Image (tube, rainbow, N blue to C red; front, top):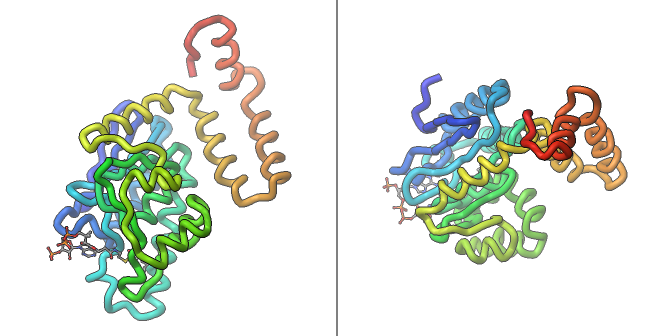
Length: 257
Ligand code: CO8
């Protein structure tokens, strides 16, 4: 597939996905979802991949769903588009490697929903966050009502969802919406450093710790513990990644994954 909106580069197992439609503040249209779904399917079969970073070009990360494209949808088309976006953003959690949102600017509406689909978020100090759908007589449709409360708590979520207030990066950090705030010129470098750190860990351990944490979040504590114990065990045994990691530690050398 030839990408018109996404720019993708990959080095040393780190894929950088830049959403590039700056004239429309990188607003999410049907084409975006086709391209992102394709990129994710390619990533899923790439054994050399270790981390995906998603960012936006220009002064927005993503300013939401494309209002111009969305405006004339029927109720059925609106629901279908919402389900489609939800599936795309859920596919980030299903990916075998961590996905980092590098939030360079406005992350509004569907843009914040995209960022919340990532495993964690690093923000430029200039980034702005909000769920302004109610300004348009809408509600979030790409899982914003569900993910925001899980990330920042019910009252913080309802405050943002009902006031449509746009908050800055420090406030986003305070409520736990982002994990780090850095100067704009440091954003990509910081994300690359985090990605490099992750890519030096045991690749199977990273895949499993991500999957067990995500799956366990929607399970009871007991079910989650059961899953953890199973997956913990799967990293043991001859030729296993755990055996290599623990042997390397005892032999005071770097593991050879
Ligand atoms: N959709 C389409 N075009 C957009 C969008 C958008 N979300 N955001 C900005 N643009 C366009 C503007 O129309 C403008 O185009 P043009 O130059 O042709 O007039 C261009 O980008 C630049 O924007 P501005 O001139 O407005 O730039 P400013 O710097 O003055 O303002 C803002 C930047 C604050 C980001 C402002 O553009 C803004 O408020 N944008 C809309 C934000 C918004 O409301 N987002 C939520 C959209 S709804 C949504 O995301 C729901 C998701 C779930 C959908 C479920 C499926 C049905």
